[in-house]
Image 1: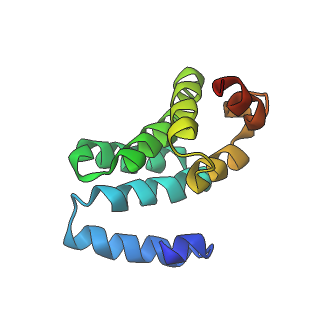
Image 2: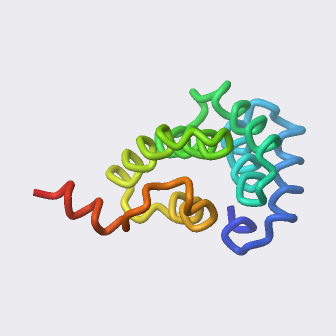
Image 3: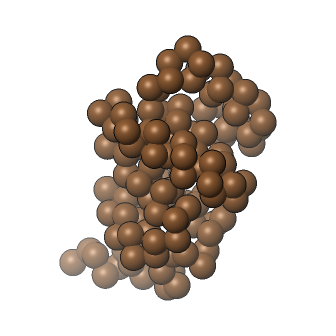
Length: 124
């Protein structure tokens, strides 16, 4: 995670690859590999890794599972699912850095109006 946050995706991939060699069912590592691939627009590999993470979704926390489903929806160009999942994530985990990174990288996939407008409408 430190390597990912620090912007060193290449080292993060190497570390995650070593982790997955030791435990091929480490769902969080598959999620992060998929996320890195998605952000690099390697959609096929991203989909593969994200699906592996979901295959062992009982080993993901609720946030990671939702983000994995969102990343897979982005990779497969499912705008309706992206809208649904991003709204749910935004409600439960406001200002989520992973969601923000996905929005920045794939702005055309998300709802076109600003997030602030979404939050105002949700609050009474």
